[in-house]
Length: 178
Image (cartoon, rainbow, N blue to C red):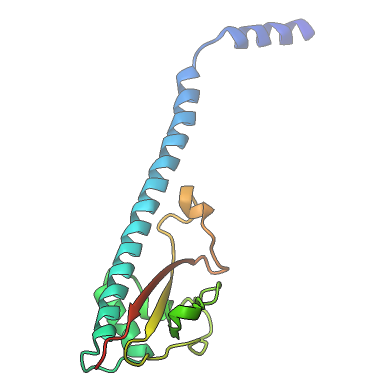
């Protein structure tokens, strides 16, 4: 029995059939993970640039005081219109806008106010309009679901219990005289 087992092990060690299959499995899994990470990075950059652009456009409208008084809901709606690629934007976007003193700069709180559509709605943290020549900070936090949440970068992202990752855009502007 032992000699039969030894013979089988020796023969198995000498065989080279299937070695290409092992290499294929190892390399294929590596390359597919790299591809999935690349796709996730691409979508993440696209979302971020669209959100950043939309916040900049709406901030410009608020800054110039174009005759339209922006409240929280109108600013959020305009940002979502400008960044039309963002899915379920109005339910997953939270804004904060505060006036700051440039001589005694007080930044926004470290923890951004983020919320996804599944969570229970909360009141707006801060959204105030500045007076002429005041420095304003605006921060937008978007919750989104990764394209490939179980592979590569999508798996490594910080996500909440519902699987949403967050993206934060901050901008500063000086309120123009009216």
